[in-house]
Amino acid sequence: MILELADFSIQPGQNVAFEEAIQRGLKTVIAHAEGFEGFKVNHCIENPQRYILQIFWTTLENHTVGFRGSPAFAEWRAIVGPFFATPPVVEHFELVAKSA
Image (cartoon, rainbow, N blue to C red; front, side, top):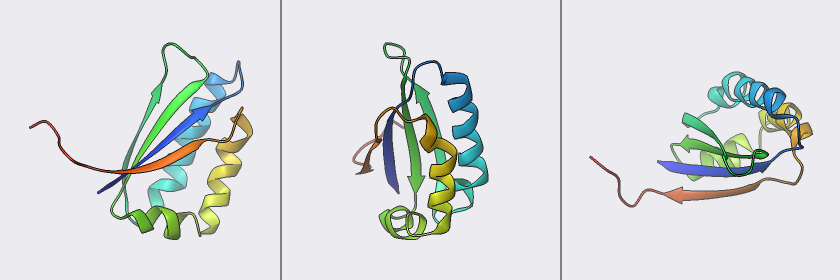
């Protein structure tokens, strides 16, 4: 399994609208992508404009080729993109260890 970690900085005062939009986009667009295995969204306590999105994919290519190369990616960006203060930082990780 691959973890996609996206770090978002949104425009001030847009938290409620962004949280609604990101959940809608995840459930209506990303959740239907091949290889999608789940997600988590976390809000930063110290910086209220910051969010971390974790998406779990079966393979790296499910995200980088399949999803990003599909029309669904443009649909996703149309939903969440207007809230971004800066472009998101997106990285991918492989699991090394976990608790029981």
